[in-house]
Each structure stands twice: as C-alpha cells, then as structure tokens.
Image (cartoon, rainbow, N blue to C red; front, side, top):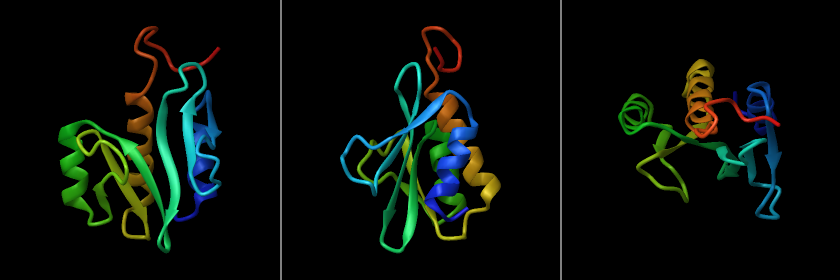
Length: 118
C-alpha cells in the first residue's frame, strides 16, 4: 500500500465512513465516521511519500515506532495518541491496515457503543 487511493479505499471498506477535505486542500484527505464525524485517519503527501496519521493506544504507539523507522510521531498531531505511517514500502500492508483499523476502532462512537452510522 503506497498510493493515497489505496488507503482511502481501505478506509471506506471499514464501513459507515466518508472522506472529507476540510482544509480546502486536496492534498489532505480526512477519513471520518459518518455518525459522529470523528476522524480516524489523515492521508496526505509529504515529500515523495504518502503519509497516514492514525490514532493509537500509547503502548502500541511505542511498539509501532520501534518496529518500523517509517512509523514516527504524528505530523501536526498530538504525539501521545497519534502516529504517522510513511507509505514508502517498508511497513507491510497487513500492519498498515491493522493500524488504520485500530484507529477506526478507537474513534468509534463511545456513547452508543456502536460503529458510526445513521
């Protein structure tokens, strides 16, 4: 997984989500839960690579950062709860998908205890 459209397609497959461009900049795509509008992924190009910011538990944050040099403290985000994944081919696709899915789960609507939806 190295292309922005691949990341967006995977995020859309998680269900009841939409892509948003709130910064009026096509470079930045924000993936949100439909019901709560909470963000679970920021997708953008920085340098020569696509980057994805994902939310994570602090213990996983450190694990991912130590496992891959392409997982770094999140660009423009709270570095306690967010990582940036640089899609340069060094992080296996299964791990990228796992990080995105965990971010999705962490940002589900806590009030209803269900996935976002109408």
